[in-house]
Every structure is written in structure tokens, then in C-alpha cells.
Image (cartoon, rainbow, N blue to C red):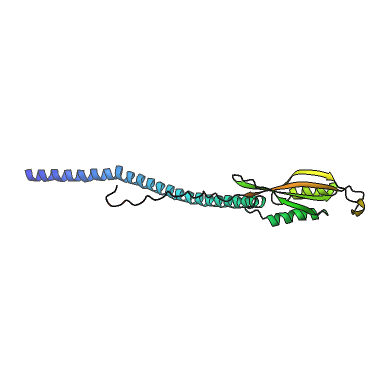
Length: 210
């Protein structure tokens, strides 16, 4: 009887243990597992949204950088037209001569002047003269100042000429001589520092010498 009672007690304890375990699983473990699963699903969705946002941001940033690079390239092209990297003397003088011929004048006595070296660009000057009417010279200088590259007429001096008015196309127009200079600019390329002279190598010491 004692053994039967003992076995019955063990059986009751076993049943109670199973019931307690089931109650724990039902009351605590399953709800917590559900909460954890929901939280994990929420985290996964946040990761997906984050990755998508990063991709969209990178795509938008790339597009923005490309647009900025295009604008900088356009600005640089305009700057290269205003201030080229080469002096291009023949082309420059041809443009000035064309500006003079457009109003019926001819440039003469072209003289290059010393170059002025700057940090980012160099300045070139040319002295020249032209003869014609006051309004013709004014229109010519305006055209020169409106060239695609920066060309500034400076140091203008006017003087009446002693030419025979009968040889002029219009004898009623007083011919004057204009002497002036044009100044233009050339962008400097990347500065390359001059190579320094290497120190002379020390003579090899003879055996026994220090």
C-alpha cells in the first residue's frame, strides 16, 4: 500500500509538472514567442525600408552629382572661352581686324608689349592704331570689347590727322588717328615647381678612412 501511495504521489507530481509546463508554455512562452516574431518582422521591415531609402538616396545623390558636374563643365567651357589657356595671337589679331573691317577701318602698327605674369592667369597687351571717323572708331572699340574672349581696349589716345579730306570717302568727316592698346588674359596651367638641384654625392671613403 505504501508503494502504491508513493507511486500515486509521483504520478500526481508528474501530472502537475506537465500541467505547469503546459500552463507556462501557454501563458508565457507562446505569447513571448509571438511578440518576438512580431518584433523580428518589424525589424526586418525596417531593414528593408532602410536599404531601399539608402538606394534611393544614393541614386538621387548620384544624379545630383552628375548634374553638378555637368554645370561645372559648362561653366568651365564658358570660362575657357573668356580666358583661354593659350594666347592664340593670330586668332586674336584676326578678330580685332575683323572688328575694324566691320566698320570700314584697318588696323595698323601692331606691337606686342611685355607680358604680365599673374598667379592664375597671364596678361598680354598689344599696341595698335587706326584712322577713321570718331563714330567708326567708337563702334570698333565696342565690338572689340564684346568679343567672345575677354579683350579690353585701354590707354586710348585720339589725335586729328592731316590727311587730305578729298581722299576720304566722306570729306565732311574729320579723320582722327586712334592709338590704343588691347589687353587679354590667358589662364595658367597647373604650376610645376622647378626641380631642385640634387646635392652632390659624397665621395666614397677609402678603406681604413671614416
